[in-house]
Amino acid sequence: MFRGWAGLGAVVAAAIVLFAGAVLYAIHAAPDPRGYSGLELEPMSAAAQARTPFLDRGGALIHAVAKDSPAADAGIRPGEVVAAIDGRPVRGARAAARQLRAATVGTHLTLRLYDITQGEVKPRDVAVTMGPEPDAPDLLSVRPPRTLAKAPRPAPIVAANAAWSRRILRGPTIRPVPLFGLGSGKCNGFVPQGWRVVGHAADNSMFRVAAAQGFSHAIFQSAMLDGASADDFVRDYLTRTFASKALVAPPQPRPYGFVLYDFGNAKGGAGFVIARVSGNRIAMWIAAVPGADVSWAKSQTGAVALSLTCAAPHAPKPRPRDPGLLATRISLDCIRGACRETDFAATYLTVLRRGYVHNTKGEMFLVNPRRDFWQNGADGPGFYRQTGGENEKLEPGRIN
Image 1 (cartoon, rainbow, N blue to C red):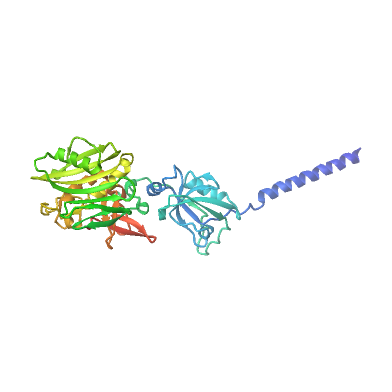
Image 2 (cartoon, helix red, strand yellow; image 1 turned 90 degrees about the horizontal axis):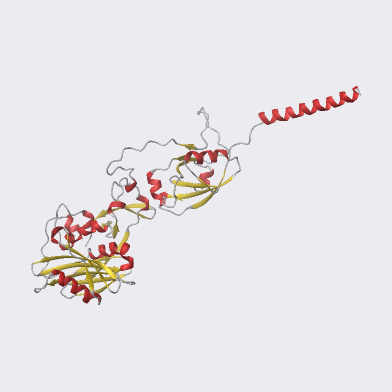
């Protein structure tokens, strides 16, 4: 009996010793080494949020990528936004840093990225294999962090044209609409790709361009009233030109003696007329688009119409530039002090939210001046476009 109990006690004691040893080994054994990505993260800036419209909320901005790190080997670049890690949405820089620190060496992570530095709003998935943490240089007393989530800085008080303003931090994603010159006789203008000249009067009193497909027309017309009222002349001209009875809204006064007429017709067309009467002469700039597309097509076609200029009979002589004529609405001649009718008519571009810019090669573009102005561009405040991976600064004004 005693010998049996003694044997059982010895077995129990041995089991306790083994269990205690296993516990102590688990406590003191080195944990699996944490992985290293080489990413340095920071909270999303207003610019990053503005340039990632498909990202509803959250995200972490990549501030830096360590040289020769797993992230660098995967092709990740500073300025990109981390939207998700292994399918889990990233709520912020701290959350992303915690998830990266939790991964061990050899772990494969898939990062969903938005490349805001190149204007890419579509995400891409990048696989990163976590590597061992690099040895610190002898001169350093601490080892470099695996990831860093910077504490958010309080935003400054809102001020007009501040460099961090959401309204003007869209630089790399600005894509001005390219315009191309068309002309006939002593008339010319700028149009989107695919438009053509469909009418021109020999005395340069009329110039008409239209889109190759669909009902979008831009017209300049100069004519004598010969006793007719301006309202009746505009209505009859629209009815004859588009072969459909025009329904014209009451005229609205515009600066510099111009009048605005909004119109529609039974064929489903819609648009506007900017007109001015000088003595017995009327000058008109007409934009007509499909009624179904008026929300977006009216502004672009209107900008085309207001770029049309002709050496028309009885046209008034150029006048000095008025301070109210913004540079993105007028021609270079007007900027230099010789403004024609078209320059004064184009004040309506403020309502259409469109403006003209050009580059040193004479290429023309259409922008939204309120939205596309980049305060912190590489070459100073202004309008930019991306070409060949570089941001090219554009200057305001029409070149015709």
